[in-house]
Length: 152
Length: 152
DNA sequence: TCTATGTAGATGCATGTGCATTTATCGTCA
DNA sequence: TGACGATAAATGCACATGCATCTACATAGA
Image (cartoon, rainbow over all chains, first blue to last red):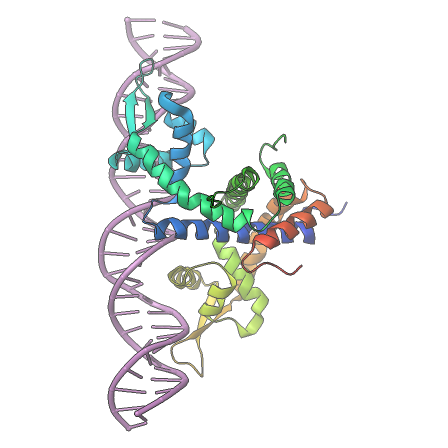
């Protein structure tokens, strides 16, 4: 019985590219935001989720589920967002432990301005380099690496 | 003249998947290393480059070129690696400012033990989920996103 | 009802990161 | 040679992150 735990050369190469490219792309996008005097990507992720959630807002633990942030990370990120007036923390009626986070008008505005820059980065870094078919192929392959794997 | 700066839905989806999957995979690999009582991935990257460089070692600025770490990051990472006895800092003859970093026997051993865990993560997370052809397709697509784009 | 266990979220402390600046040396050109 | 800008690497300081723990409330079970 031979040991088959080690990855194939193809797997190693795909992994290495994935690591390198993703770091490069994040860095580019972060740079663009910084350049525009805007908050970091992490803020966008949270504001985006909250904007999608609408007036009902989201509980912090729901943000943890939707994003990949750790609990303490969300806790502090929300504190900063609140300090900047981008979100509001509301007590929740039927659970005295919890709170509901709702995006504010200023938060929506900040998100909009971030998207102007972030979206352009995505368009340049990804949209301009691969055709729509290739982008779909990439999404499909990445979806299979997700945990749990994506359906489509 | 319409504004065409914003990304297509295909680009957005590919970007989102790339961000999410890469963070998930990094986290899984980091967890596995931590689980095994081993240093974080960043240490592996540096030890790997140094091991490939052989006895000649590498200058810190060469590590910066090969990896995606910032200068101050490399400086401190090397300080930690040296403190742990995994690398040696040697003065370089023809440049009094610089130093050459060489991996030690202990460093090679640590790298080997890290690879046993890291390699298994790659095999499980990537190698087991896509066929060799799919892995090659993924590598090719990611290569086109690299800056500068990969040849192969 | 009282107690134990579980879950939501915050926080103290150690460590890591980002930014700007510093120190030391190099190379060039007057 | 001496002055000056460029490059190699380190570091002070502010801020962010990870880990463990803590507080507060909720739920279930005796």
